[in-house]
Image (cartoon, rainbow, N blue to C red; front, side, top):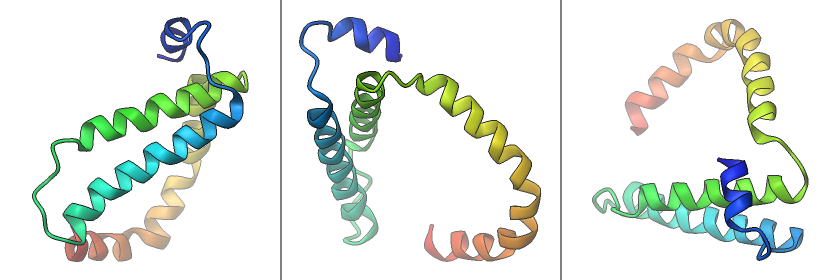
Length: 104
């Protein structure tokens, strides 16, 4: 996805500062959609998926501007987390299950 997006935007890339500001803007829009559902009881917003995609687009742009291969970084993070999951299940599992029942 990152390579495809980079090729798509070739020649019209934002500067790095513009990429982080754009990402913040998109995260804010996603938060607004979720707030409408979770805090104000509105039905699931039709734009929720679109806003998630906008956040991903912004994140990919930011990574590209700093020459970060997000796919590689993500896989390394998954490997790191895999080793922590057994401990997390013991330490946090019951509490998180109770919170999901209460809040979801």
